[in-house]
Length: 450
Ligand code: ADP
Image 1: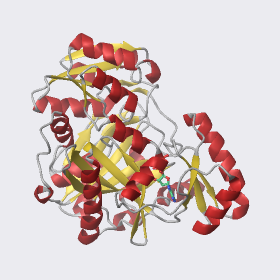
Image 2: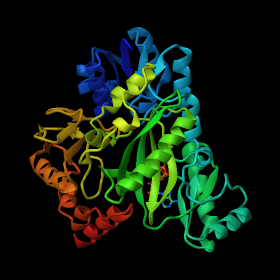
Image 3: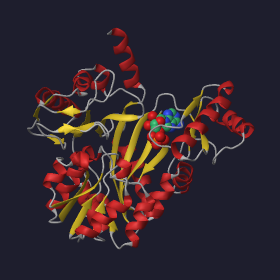
Image 4: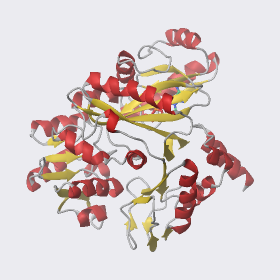
C-alpha cells in the first residue's frame, strides 16, 4: 500500500480523495494555487505545497510544479481527481518514468479513450453497441454526404478530440451539412488543435445512461450498475440518479455485463465510465471516461462501495475488493450539483459565503469543500458542493431530497439551489420522465413565463 498520496486537484473532489486516504491510513499531500491558500483540502491534508498562481494552467495543470511537489513531499502516488490532469496520458507517463504511481488507468488506455474515433472503434471491437456513423474521420464533403444519406438525417458532426460539447453541430437536412462540417472543424481546430470530425446519427430524444466499471488491470472487471444523467444544460450534467428510472433489472444486467466483459478483455485498470445514449430500448456508446466521475457518489450510495478506496487498492496492485456477485444494488440515490451561479441566467457568482448550514439526517450526504466565511475564487468551475440523498425507493429519495433542500443554507452568493427546489416538485421529474433536452426546454419555458 502507498505511504503518501499527493492529491492533484482542488475543491470537493480533493476533500473526497483525502477522506478515503485517511480511512486507509495513508498520509496526504495537498497541492494548491495561491488562490486556494484557505481551502479546506489544504487545511485537512497532512502537508501542503503551493504550486503556482491562480490560473489553472500555471498551477493545477502545471506538470513540472506537481512533480516538484511529489519530490519535496516524497509522495509515492498521485490521485488526479476529475478534470485537470485526470485524463492526461502524458502526465501518467511522466509519473511512471519517475516511479510515482498514477492512481488511474494506463496511459495507453487514456490515449485510446481520449480520441473519440479510436474509442468508438475500440468499443465496437469489444462488443459494445455504438451509434451508427462514419467509420472514421471524414475529410471529404462528398463522402460525408454519402455517409449522411446512408445513416439518414438528422446527423451530428462531432470533433474527434471533443469534450464539453464543443465542436458538435447538428445537420437537420442535406442542405445544412457543409456548414455543419465547416463550423465543427473550425471550432474543433480552435479548441483542441485538431480539426478531425466524424459523423453520427443524431438521436432525437435519448436519455444519457452511463455504466460504472472497474478493472483490476489483470483481466478481471466488474460493473457497478448505471447512472442516469439525462438532466443536462449545455451538455453539462445537473442532476444524476442511480438507478435509471428507464431501465429494468434485466436491461441493467445485460448492458452491465457487456461493459464488464469489454473491460476484462481490455485488461482495463481502475475506475471508468462507459457513456451511452439510450433511446427506444437501445444503447448507443458515445464515449468512455477513464477517471472517477463527479457523480460517483450515487453509485456508492446504492452499492455501499467506496470507489476511491477501490481505485487506491487497484493502483497498489491489491485488486478489487469485490467480485460481480458481491455487488448488490440497494434503493435509489439522487445527486444535485450545487453551483455558485444565478439559478436563472447561470452566470457565475463567486464571492464570500456569509452563512452556511449543511443538511444532515438519514440518507443525506454533502460533498463540499466550502465553509462559512470561505471565499469562492473566480478562477475555477462553479461547483460548490454536491447533495446526495439515498432512499429505499425513488419516492422516498425524492421526499428526502425535498427535505434536505429545505434545510441547506448557502448565503452570500447566488446558487442553483432554487432550481432543484423547483425540479423536485415537477411532475415529469417525479415520474422520472425526462430526456437530455428536457431541462433546456423547461428553462426556456420558465424564462418565457417570467
Ligand atoms: P463531449 O465529450 O463533448 O461532452 P459527448 O460525446 O459525451 O461529447 O456528448 C455530449 C452530449 O452531446 C451527450 O450527453 C448528448 O447530450 C449529446 N450527444 C452526443 N452524441 C449525440 C448523438 N449521436 N445524438 C444526439 N445527441 C448526442
